[in-house]
Image (cartoon, rainbow, N blue to C red):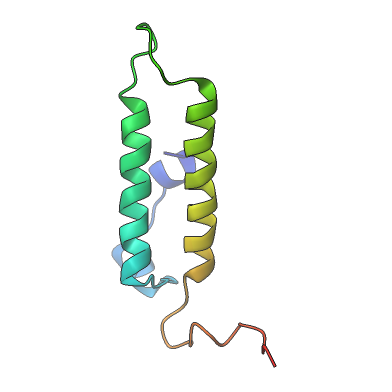
Length: 90
């Protein structure tokens, strides 16, 4: 956690009046799957021999990174159509 967030003096009104983004239900599921993948990587015991190499870990990290970028790209503000910023494909 960053020091900015930890030492923040935000009030309840600041939180309620702040900018909030919406995610589609499917993107929330993808976030949960990404968290589970990272949790599994955290359980790997590096002191024991394992069939998993750094290439395996890097592949999972790249997958999670691409997924997170796409999920954040799909987030939208309430009251603004998610397709409002999309270019016309005519």
